[in-house]
Amino acid sequence: MSEAEEYTLILGSRNTSSWSLRAWLVLKRCGVSFTEHLIQMRQPDTKAQILKVSPSGYVPALKRRDLVICDTLAIAEYMAEQFPDLALWPMESDARAIARSVSAEMHSGFVPLRQTMPMDFLGREPGFEPTDEALRDIRRIEEIWTQCRQAYGSGGPFLFGSFSIADAMFAPVVSRFTTYDIPLNDIARAYADAIWQWPDMVLWQQQCLEGEDPS
Image 1 (cartoon, rainbow, N blue to C red):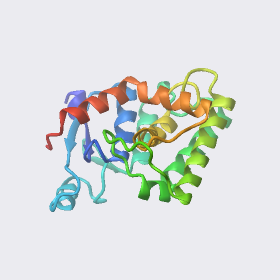
Image 2 (image 1 turned 90 degrees about the horizontal axis):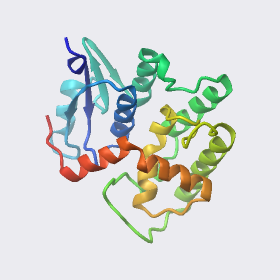
Image 3 (image 1 turned 90 degrees about the vertical axis):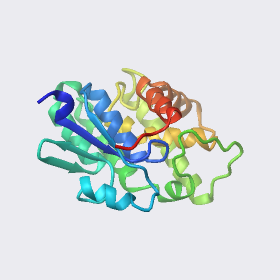
């Protein structure tokens, strides 16, 4: 069995599926070849199509032989264990603890931002005004980015220096801030620019522009 046949990532529509982007970035960081099974979202049969390949009924899901892993953070943890030399979590214990903490906060929080500023990777809404609740989420995310960069980011342009799972978790937020024209402080803006210019983010944008052909 080839490496590409070994991993299959089940994705939702690239322009709108923020969780799919996160898992995809992790697999790209690992450097493995993988097959993509893309399912168009917001269609009458979307749920039925997902349930054929993902027992949770959600995307993304990662298939490897007889194993099916649902949920982006679980996929990221699994890939970190498969490729320990890549340090998908920071090597230093304090930094690793904070990286896991902010990733978990992203995983379970920021509901107002998610609801009122959905990911639209190619969309642009200049002059957008966030709700008060979403603005609180924005300020908290800006605080996370600033504090992580100041405390742990000396080794590179990302939250913990080199690209990590935490960066994959916040990458769709960078897309949202770009779409909705959100001003940021200088440290957070430099970080957002680094994510936006990351080659795999550029590739994702190119694939959005080229359109999608569901498997």
